[in-house]
Image 1: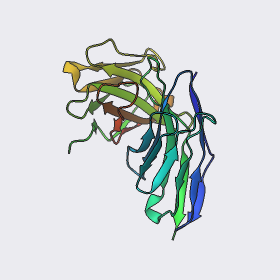
Image 2: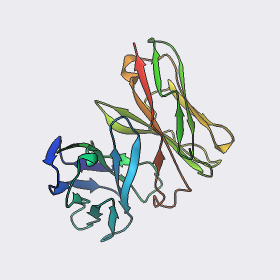
Image 3: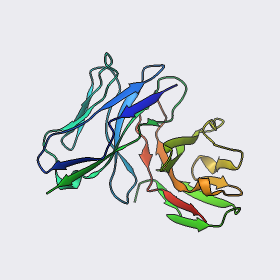
Length: 113
Length: 116
């Protein structure tokens, strides 16, 4: 079945540091890939997505590139801010009949001033 | 606002009681999903509705769980004879017609369910 493996957290960085959160996936079909973010006390928000190989999703300074050859979708940001502190979830929807998201376990990010 | 609305935001109930959780999707969204977020299991899919098609119930953990969607809009998730392991945050999401997953799912803030 489908699965998503995320970098274990928590991750603690200083403001303006470079961020990478690794994500790899297993899928039976050709999935669409997503990063969702959950700020403290809030629901999940879509951060970015990519629907085919070599697509780059980007939003709010975050980027992730769909790498089919390495089945990866790593999240990066060049300079994090305190306001980026949240839990980040990598997820996929497979191209078969299933329409539900399969999520990774989430990575807690804390950015210190 | 125009987002997915869930109620109640918090629910505390005694073991063995039935609970109903409500989700009001974004207007015009034909697809509706329920997920569960718990410490031990992460984010799990429960059930999916698309238009007038039969729902995909493959994620429901037991026959104590059921859901319906009336008039293609509001959905209710019902848990009968609640158990302590049902304690979790129940998330609802909606999207436009699925289209191979290219339509993003928009989530509500969830209902935090606590079983005493």
